[in-house]
Length: 434
Image (cartoon, rainbow, N blue to C red; front, side, top):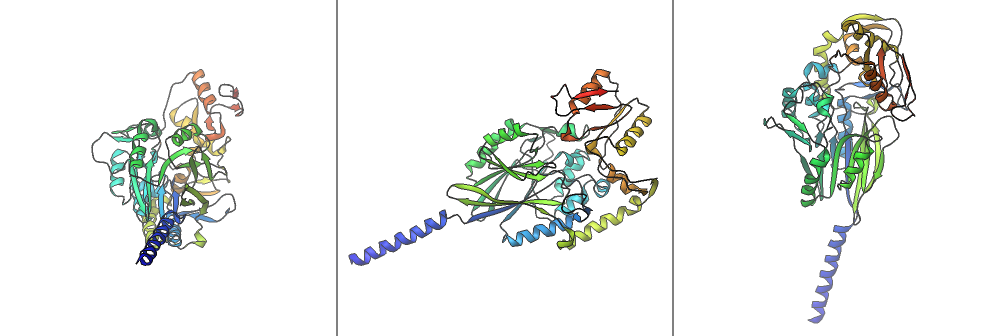
């Protein structure tokens, strides 16, 4: 009898040990796709540089096809997170006020999307309409809806994939109200992360999540101070944007920093593989995956939808209203012929002495030949206003001094010339101003 009891005890101990080993074994895996900064780009576009120069990249139907392929490869153990700024920037987005973009994104299988400032480009009423039309969750941890219209967004979201529980937060750019037209954000307040994030992070920890992710539009090189502050709050992965750097992945404190291409426009996504073990979590790999039209099977239903939107506005877009005499390249870090033309027109129409245009608002080159309405939208995709100001010389000098940095491109100008040295400290960069 003692022998039987001993054997039973041994069996129980062995089974319990196996169960504990299985529970603690480093076999729990999760993959994340980061997307965003679509800027309304539904169609493939020709890459201008890099290893993919001359190839067609992007197109939302192809991006959706790529994500479906990855989801199948990962046995469904995948979440898709988006950092926003998707609703405007192309004719299809402009003439449908973001509807075309939202209806297509509904097919992608997005688990959570940050609200970016571009989501407000058509005003608060359209913003609310587009959120209601979406089948995915919008995240805005630091946004307050004072309109009390029950706008469809969440402060946090918890996603469960198998035995892994993930908590998501979203940092809407606090300067959103000044990044879009006055009145577009009426009824909404935007808090800084110190006043909004800690209580929600505490909530996620109390719910025993395995992983906390913050979706942001912070610049990987410019916003180091903010990233350090977020890291101190106990966030495991902070998604950021990078512009023209080689950065994909780094660490600040105990937080992993994952960089998505801030100029992506749907041409690439960021794929991250995570492993959980007894010591917590670690990022196993990160990869920037390009959406190559020639190598991906598109989402056919979405392709039909996009073609229908394009067809409806082609009669407007194909109208020719000018001829271009040569090829002209858009410059980001230097004065350009295109910038001169745009600012000369602004100055003439307003009967002003000077005109300024930020380089980031100019989005394409000019090609010799017919110039169509679509090309105009490609060149200046955002619905901006021209503002006429009376300024003192000292104010103009201060404006140029503060913007004499290559991080955001130079100011295109008409009516003046200026030279600067970006390596000098602020206040001493401007060399000459005529």
